[in-house]
Length: 172
Image (cartoon, rainbow, N blue to C red; front, side, top):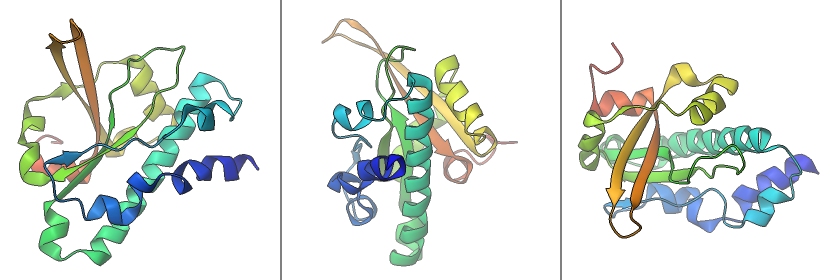
């Protein structure tokens, strides 16, 4: 039952279905893994374990999207596709973090070249626990938003494969 509850997060979210993601043609889209927080709250786990579970599920789905895209898209379309996970939530040890799927064209992603590695311990520890830190980069974008009068951050969890498309020398 537990595993079925986890997978229902994917099943009930039409925004992150394979075709919706790989056929997106706009500047960017950022659908969330979780549509309703009650789906997550019903898992009855610690925040740390919920975070690990959600990001493990998101990475699983992301990898499957890439496999399907490689088979469904032309070589050019596949090479132009950029997809990664993002975090736009306020980060706290008291609340779970919702992964998003950031979909765009590789040409739109040159700004990632200027971003620094994430220094947030909570985020970094999720990926250390999942043992995927060697195959991803976590980049942080921070800005001041005058509308809400505070500093905001977006974290990009980018596979090394995608990083090489944008920053060929970054991993050396």
